Length: 78
Image (cartoon, rainbow, N blue to C red):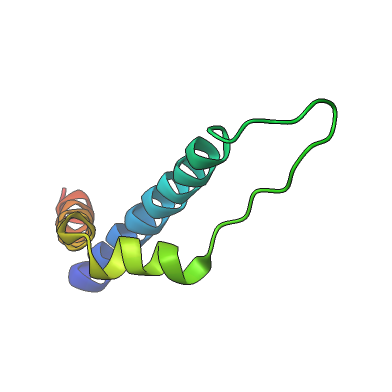
């Protein structure tokens, strides 16, 4: 039972961190574009580019997933 609880806690930690990282990534890239006068320009991000960047081309994504699961399991066993 502690394995299931640890996986759930680790997944929650990982998803929270991923969402915060995505928000910071979008905010940082959106702040580099110049604003023209009083008119606000819409800045969009392609979802498929973000998925390709995070899931397929980043080994740190998988390392963070494993680390979050291990941290979740270790927190539950304490």
